[in-house]
Length: 383
Image (cartoon, rainbow, N blue to C red; front, side):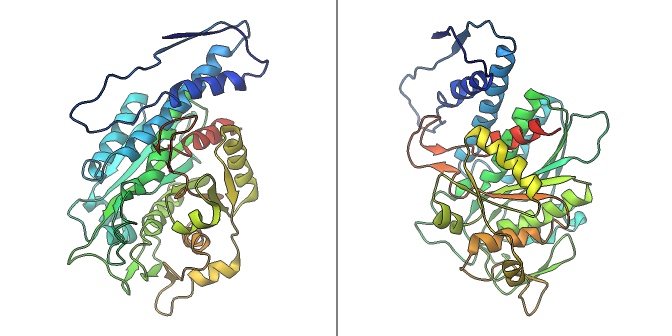
């Protein structure tokens, strides 16, 4: 099908939005039916316009949309097919497509790095963990990269703090943060901004076995800080703690972490608003501006000493991974904040926005690929 458009507003934003919508609104989720009805796809878009830059703006929009669809694809895959090993393979495909450098750390290498928090989450699983490190170099020299860190829990049972029979359904989406950062890298690889970007994904599933970590365990994170485990279903923040520490060790100038982290953020903000926290107002403003441009709604939650002190309240270790239900989304963010040191940092909790309960203007029911566009646009906007 060919769609011809004959006029544009002076603002190239419209052309970019058109490119995004063309790719995202026509996206159809892959299913595993043995037979499917013939489907009609919009395959061609013709643009007729006099303005300079229209084609480039549309191509940027298409790249952002394709990155979002990549994220949707990953989140849609069931946990038995998308293990940490398979997620790493998909990341390698993205890196190869765009000529990016990538390292995939296996369990032995993760142990050598001292990532005790990620390894604790993996203890109950037969599937080995992976730590994905992808680099996009947009400057002449590799230095001061912006780190995009995504939670890659490919399925979350809750561990011994077991989820209920209703709450456990859909937990294949617990790697939505990983999907978001990988989708952003897919878009960045096409758009080629003049920035250095470090993409980090700590990945495992969270299972139960005789070897699984337990409430009351004390573990040692990569940073050296000790953590009292009060809740094994608060596992994502543990994996992110080690990844954020690695980002700092690699000289990250700024950090954004993205995670389907808490049910608390869904209670607080619903399913159309992503919760955010930050230690740096200027950095948050840049991320927020990008989210506004992309129509991905974000609301800032408090990052205050009263909450930080609760995370530090363990009587037996440096930190408590789950101090209680009150302010749960904020406490989870504060826990990650204990590992970012002074690096400008934004935390994005997409537990409510990673899945759509019904079809919408930009896609079908199911994974939204949320924050892929915001992350890529944040990098694009940096000066």
